[in-house]
Amino acid sequence: MANETKKRVLITGATFPADVAEKLIASGLELESVPGDLKKEEVVAALQGAWGYVLGGYERMTEDVGNQLEELQVACFLGTGYSTFMQLPKESTQTAFTYTPHANFAAVAEFAVALMLDITRDITNRANQVTAGGWSEIATPSLIGAKVGIVGMGHIGQEVARILSTGFGAQVFYWNRTARPALDDLGFTQAKSILELCEQVDILSLHLDHQSGVTDHIVGASELAALGSNGMLVNTARAELVDPNALRTSLENNELRAAAIDGYYEEPTPSPDQDPYGLLKLAPKLLVTPHCAYLSEQALHRMAEMAAENLLSVLAGQVPPNAITLDTNDI
Image (cartoon, rainbow, N blue to C red; front, side, top):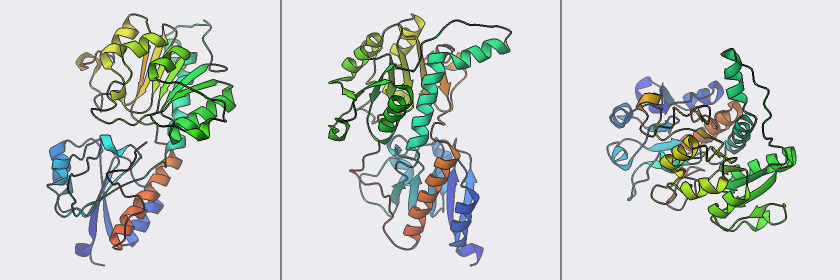
């Protein structure tokens, strides 16, 4: 197939594994990889003339961007929680919107537990102290037998609960927007509200999808106060679930022991001096990682495989296996 007849697919952020890329190329697609930090106008420019788009960075495909891409036939979000990054059009278009649901749930759950261990046992802070010439042998809390609250019992939340209960003997409490009868026999305790959940636990872990105007700041001053001065917060969902001003005040005033966020309110993060939320200066009380919980090699490979399945289905004139529709749940 001559190059000029190939359909171009733009891939941002995480690069496709070689074996998956070769499969797409063999099918007549031309792959172009670019960094995942494109601004809106750069997204539009990069996608001009593109047949396909794999959103693996932290740029946003808003509705007005999609309206400018008349040749785009398929767009695929690498991950489950697409709604923060990919805005579906209000009316039908020629573009098939797809994603890779639950391919990375185990990786995110693993990372959430790692963050819990880090801030509970003060690991990163102690390592930095040693590097700076310090030495601390002060006892810390433990994750073993801890009371952990989980907000959102989808695939990720349930995997976190399984790891904590079976691996650490933790007591698991949870809140979910809808009933989960399957959890009734697992020994987990359901709370009636997030506030009630915070009153019962030592650590709060967030695994709820962010929906603008719906789940913004669902953890605020009242919830953080209920966690208390020995309480800890882990957020591997979206930063926007937590009120940044309330979080800053709680950490500054020692009303919360520690917090960890995978990702931030602005990505990539500004310098601490330019941070409008004043949170990045609060290390070691606040640990921020660069939105990488989902990026294990195994998870990335599975996401790439699912993205390839979506692309090749559209190429063959078929309905993609993981299409996004208006009623798709992205948790």
